[in-house]
Length: 528
Image (cartoon, rainbow, N blue to C red; front, top):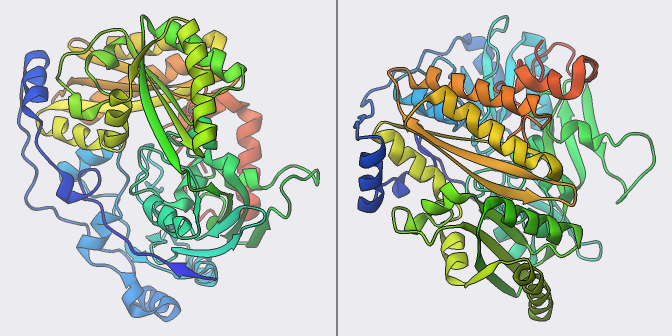
């Protein structure tokens, strides 16, 4: 069985759907003017894309492999495949810096065509950058160019089919180019859901979820994406990998884990088999108020360790709550203070009612104050909209970016304080550092920071210095350098501190075995 789907493009120098770009709301604009001042930054009206470096013979050979209409060198397409969507990526685009534009964008339609492109790239020493939705925020799409004849963006946009469904085992096999909503629509037609809803859901792809170890906003109930993967297929310069023949295996180390999180540096994922669930009949989201961030976090830990996690569980600190960042349609409005927790329940009505009753009893007993369903509905309505607010703030001279990490429960207070202090010290005043617990486990949690500061004359350098300070603090606190954004180039300098030089050597050895000439996303994950 094969079902196909459609596609959409994001704005080249903003996040998401161009039709959703909007100026700051009056309430938010007044707050920004009071804290940072307003410094309108008009976008460039004309941007020059560097010419392709590839010889006509190479382009002709790629056209022979894929068809002329699927080998693109026009400026518009190449600009859309330049970098990802981090704040530095967008600032560079807005400044007219397109030095990282690929020389050609190719669009294979099958595993075999991907393999053929890789074979050709090896023979002609072309760097190949797998491209899904383009939502990377850690430099995962900026391949090293030096020493290569050119850079090929391997755009998987044509590989967006639901290949198979196993209703007995409750698994589905999806191609990597399917964006989140497209995958959910195809599965819904079969009465199923993947349940993976990261903030990038509307534009990120199945292949990207796998290649970055993505974690969605409903991970408490459905699990991280890597926990959903039961099998995958990948094309490498050395041949094909087909992994996952059973739900569990003791046949040596799990090689699926080499591809999950590898960011296209070891191979190109061409199909993913995932665990699916029935489409939930009922969805309920609600809010809780806690007097402090520590009290709310302790309540989350109690739920996790009691095996009572709802589908959605997140907690904003005092600063994030005061600005209503968890409720984008209320930003700038007065807050009730404390710390806002969002809980969500999805499934059959009886199961939803039972879990909700049990969680309510625990949270009430720990001192939480129920806020009803209105805060939950507000969060659900705006759950994918925060990146649009970032764009609007960049427009008026406010530097806005995010970073995330994770640690064990016992270390969370120190990590929170140290990262916040490092960012405030690096950026000076005025700076706002907001945080929420985005994902929880029995043993620990993820902290997701949002930072706002007045832009300097060189905002890219300004942010890179602040990010380095925060990363140093994360490593010093013994936490992970990334919980769900992946390594890319941005986190690579701190990878050895987390996994050791020997661990980095293991990754280089895998790279050398699967990609001996180093054509796959060179410079990403591990240095050459």
